[in-house]
Image 1: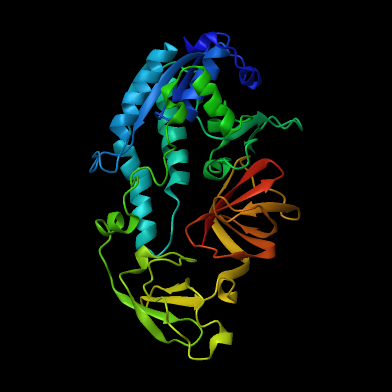
Image 2: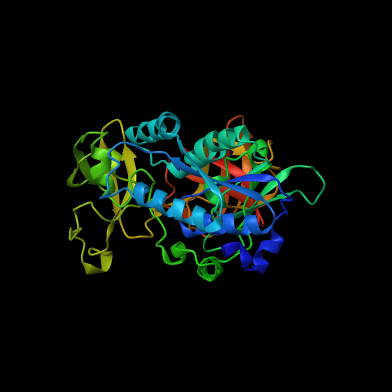
Length: 383
């Protein structure tokens, strides 16, 4: 049995003392090790497998069938019960519908952020509580703690493994959700997670991590989107001089900073080699009203750089906005280095962020997430 092994990493996890924790099991190594470590710390572990997508759930692109097989195998190995729940209706109404609305409006949403706040830490949490759970847990790389300053609030923290930190995707979680959540992998590096799984005899120790948006899987993104949002062709123009360079299939299929898939490579600007005539083209702006996609040449073109941005749909982990006069750091996209910034103003559900250094390809629809050292403060949607 896997629980016979003694893994010192479990010592940093809150002891269970026989209490019930429901763990979201995905069939991957991270959630499997999370369940293993919680059981070792004395929690009564119940697994839950969430089915969030049913449309065209086939073997070519969707791995849910194999994932469920892996979950059942892991549960048997750990000696825990598993419940399979179907949140496809909730997912379609709360996440996918918003995903399509944002793309139809010419923006680039991040459905993982909404999935966490609406499904994994709302529908899942609500269902887990009906099972008598004291806590829920996932295999996310993030941390949670009570504010050491004594405010009594719960804080969301970056993971110890900075290369895997997922706090960006969790920034919309509130106090009620976080107070019921455990993140067993908060202080563990990914390489150690795989070693723990291997030592415990879990076959998913070498399973490849899932990538991409859960309902799209590994399929071509544009191909998927075209099934729901039909093409609407228009011109591609150079932002600097309004030259028509080509045509696009629709604003929906392009995002700020995009380089590939424009099919205008090799265009020359007619001003000589010194002007950068062979530099790549990047999407710099969208004129939604005229259906024109604007592009610029060169990764560091001024049109791709922004010192300030506005965000709305604000969500603060503490339940209130941070102090506007202090200096924080922020990410305007996942896997971006933290950048120093200040909040210049907060106006209801909108605020302005001013950055010390220009940010590249700031994209409407993506999340801008603020941090104070390791503490994730929350954020909003770039407008």
